[in-house]
Image 1 (cartoon, rainbow, N blue to C red):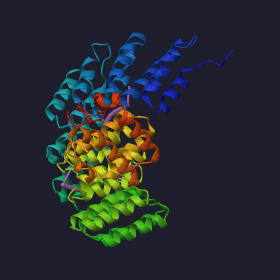
Image 2: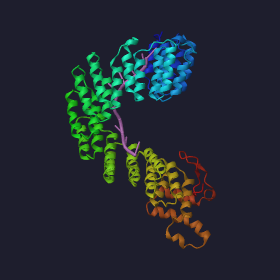
Image 3: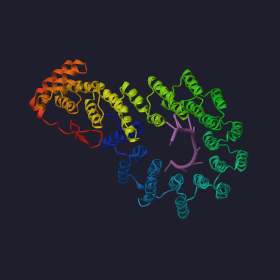
Image 4: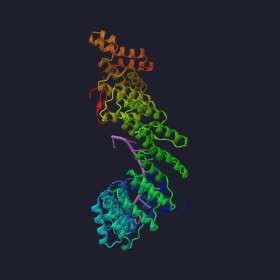
Length: 540
DNA sequence: CCAGGAGAAC
């Protein structure tokens, strides 16, 4: 007998399976296990998983299922999870819908549900709707808790009414709700947001006097508000206060400070604070370094930024493509396009593959696309090269003959003959004349793949486009020319080593084959480029 | 189960 399958086992598998759909398949398959029945726990985990990954259809259908199998009054946690996940993905209406349907499904929302939906409404700026939910909550005689107050405080702060927020804070004790540091700091942040340093600081001191001290998370949020505005000094003042209370700064704290210092241009101080990080026994992370690299690059301190990259390597922290993007962007802003290109190639050479942001940065440099595409082709990362090629068109930056050459080259090297062929045709269609090397490459690939029809088609296309050795033009009789020209082209290609001897043989036989000669090429759909289809002669 | 945590270019 196999050991019994327990709900907690299923729940943990669901939790640790990365792929929500795979988790769902497992979840469904255990239903047939002898004696196993899903519980509130397993349903909750599965619904949470689906919602977290934005699989809302599956999530909703599982919610219908759980309603049939579990006492509906126990499902509040499930609904709150769904509300949160809809909120995380910006689906405010859907979040509200879940909330609204709760009592219809015999689940009376508690204060937590009201809070969850109110918070989403406030986060997305639906302040009036949030207030309506609050009024309904009072109507239903649901008692607000400290979370409710904090959400309402936040709402007042977001609508730039910190004084109203303060009044609410002060009313909390009389409503039987104890103040805590989160509620306090939300108000304090609201004052700082409106540049009311005096009120904010007084309130901060008042909070500490009541022996209410923020934890590092809450504190970080507060100084983030300040540092974003460039007020590092005030942040330091606050930090010194909480340090005395035994609060320890963490990497978030340092990063926020460094951002603030960079913002006000105190770059050397910002760089020095790396030592402070280490003094605290913390190990600077890539995020921290990148913050500094960004600050330095934005101020045009490129050499220092590059020096910092070396330093991070010395400390066992590898830069990433973001790191390079920041410096590349700095160079572009300074107008040093060629240096930006050099650095980009340098990054590629070191194995840091440029991403979409690299190109947004470099977009001004007009030949940059070709450099980039070439780099990718050399790395045989042809997908990225093609993506760039498409993007280049979208940006109104027309590919030139060279672009085609390198990209066709890339496809041939990676054995993607369909794409190589399509690009060759597209190249010609755009009015460019590909080089014989390019023709040769595609022809070789086609012949190796026994794609004689297309290969021969290309030879005829070359003839029609006049891409032929000079000698062909000395043949005056049209029918003689028609027979001789393809042969001459193929021989010329072999002579100049653009095609292999094998390809030559295949082509030579192919052009003599009358069936092939007369046969029109089948219409090919370009797989990934819309519905346009081409015949080999370039007609659509 | 509900409030409060650093991340990038245009």
